[in-house]
Image (cartoon, rainbow, N blue to C red):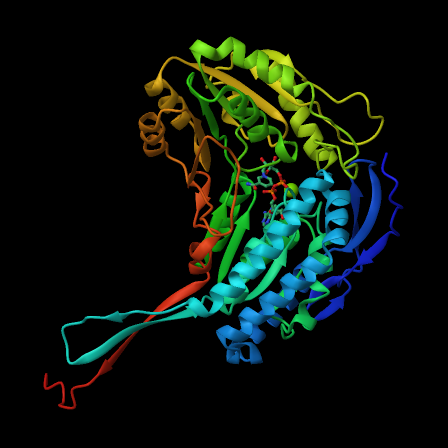
Length: 493
Ligand code: NAP
Ligand code: MG
């Protein structure tokens, strides 16, 4: 068991216009440690009136505050200062993240390194935004200016809490936007700690605001607010659809990073050890609470039986435990709600397919939302466990006959976030890469994610891209400027 002392139960307010402010209703909601089910904090619920205050602060900071006068270099330096604070406080933030969402501490430390790297990356990119000179056939100078899109509403999920905040805030700040961030109700704590450093890093009041509360109240008020120019959302496809409809009323720009049912495809000629490892890592990392989880494991029939056996044997060694223990490889699911959701899919899976391992609550733990790593096999791609995003440690193994069938099954899904293919044959690897309709395809690996490369989905996995220069683009407008160099009148009338 972990020996780290329990922190005191803090109450967090919302961060609006550079101030910590209580909810206008006076209400708070509890935040839990999913490994103990104990309350670890209380957070002020932002009402529609609080959201209005936050959007107005962001609007004023964008329209008339000193922010508009900052240079790209200033914004870059602010982002580097935020990154420094994160690096100096990694241990505290990683522990808080683990307590709040249940992910193993070692994984939280990786996340924190990625969070700092994300702020550094966009700090470096801030002053590399350039326009074009357009060769128009006129005695004129035509060029483009890149300008910030305005006030961004940013709504994020609970699986990588601070990393998702970084993916949203860093490019927006680099672009010169102002932000209202709404963390997931389950996991607001690290984002609130981050807000402590905004002013010190040089962000003027109102540039970044953080409001907490229920999606249906706080999130919905934010998306509907006419003062918002753009909504950036990561979460479920169901909520993504609600957001698009609501944002349509004021024609806000929308980017969506939704879920998936990503295929992880294994051909018989793949490196055996790496493949078995990759099948497990692809679906069980972060308790399977990963939008790009390789939750459909497609295996060539020639190796199918042996592969399922090898996966099962290795899965027995996955160490479930208190997430603050350094040797824990799988912690509890984030919440009671998610535990209920995942275990209901386990019941469905037991009827739809065969169970190789797992299938229920991890019984060694009296408390906490622990679920056994579960492998279902002989799964039909038409089964619910092959079509619906479960967002837990559940693999659906599906056999295939040949390359054409592997491609057909891979693409037979409403989603298109990610995929992976494992083979030693480079011709086959690239044919599959080209044939799969997904925003990210890995070859002989699954899940490595870098801020330098784009992230986002095809089909119902969303639209728009995060990370890299693509992520910055989503926070920029393009202004065309035409400068007439011909002094003569137009002479039309
Ligand atoms: P979710 O409901 O889509 O939540 C994502 C974010 O949207 C949260 O901040 C949520 O607030 C907010 N939200 C919810 N309803 C809203 C609305 N009507 N208007 C504006 N914002 C709203 O996801 P969830 O309930 O936490 O998890 C359910 C399922 O979503 C998971 O099982 C999984 O399939 C999927 N999911 C996908 C990802 C991903 O990375 N693609 C991440 C997390 C979950 P609340 O915190 O109050 O809900
Ligand atoms: Mg929710």
